[in-house]
Image 1 (cartoon, rainbow, N blue to C red):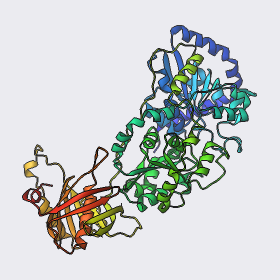
Image 2 (cartoon, rainbow, N blue to C red; image 1 turned 30 degrees about the horizontal axis):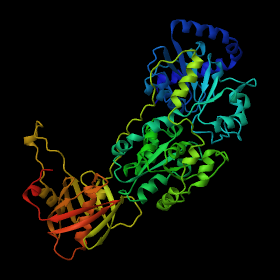
Image 3 (spheres, rainbow, N blue to C red; image 1 turned 180 degrees about the vertical axis):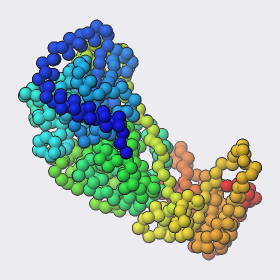
Length: 593
């Protein structure tokens, strides 16, 4: 599908980029006129700040900077799309989603600006009029891109993009740590004279959001599971390009009630592949509960919520290390990672994940390695970047900042909640009245005890193969207009119907509440199941009733004595709860589903 407005915008941008490339001398010569215009803006008390965006990732970096201008009506911000990037269409779409005021590149070239902010030195930026501030594209300078600039220099430190006639063209290089200043001086000494260490606004948003960790995990339905986040940069050496089946292997090969998995992709990977194809390629893992982070903000909220990170050579994992998250490597090597860079040093120190089944051992080994020390060489001025940035940016604007406290914005809650699989392959271990269950997606290659399937969410292929069929009750709406004419199954009626229609099914069960279920077993008959809670460190922990039904199903298959009155110890993931099996009462039998 084509979008005429976007196509027209990009065409104008390309034409203007060609004009601008040829008018470099005129732009340089018009510097005095731009300064004069700036004085007129000063007289009116307003300043024009342009954010020049080349990709969606660059836009997201700049949005984290803008709180420096909070509460200042003198600042007018405008955004423009810098032509020449392979990812410009998604950048334009991200600009439109942001709600910002956008101007065409041609207009940006004609106007003077009191300040220009950008997060990439590439593209025809030199033709813009006004002092320019250049921010790093990520955490440190860890990669080299052979197809862009000098193959042996870190992306972001290449003099080809930082100098004009031997002189730095940016008014300020806003760096996150003194080590980055040292590296800039090593590779491009003239540019280092225009650099200042200001910290990292994106990290400060993450630090500001640490207190929301429990809320993020609640939004994700994580519970007591370990949330493992896979991070993939973009390009041919990325995790998703090299090991595209790893997300599904992890989701399918490790117990669902012990681990939850999420995938964070570089925005360029969204642009390269597209959301539609990503959803198609990752469909099995997504259906089984994999969380796919949206490219703006949600990735950082997932790091806050996470327990550990599996990473390639992209710098996202350095943010995880900065907040003491466990890191496991999954980079198979190549030419992009700069030797001696912070990411190279960290990857050399952490365990390498060879296959999905090795994750528990890798996590145990990684816990002892400690990664905060690598992040400490990348991020300075933790929690103070906006204050430092405000000082530098207002100095360039020749304005006194408003006396308004500024603080990094908290990250929004992840949404929507991940999908809940409708079918599980269940491994069960029964030892007397103690039962433990491990649940896996139905596509797993793990040997299972039985297939437990939710009705009617699952399709006929799984329903017809299920040993345990169960359903969750819905709310009774007596206020619905057709409530009197709508028939509802009772728990006893529905379980009887299921066993009659599914001859291969041994157990039918209805989840009435999180603590009560009705079970109909072909041999044991009707039973009520009462699920307890686990108290730990002042918290109340619950397990999924569907997992308890699998435990009861396995116990009934193994039981040799009476089953109408029994107390089980049921272990699901890291939680053990008491489960009482009793004769059902009339309330359970007649419960409306």
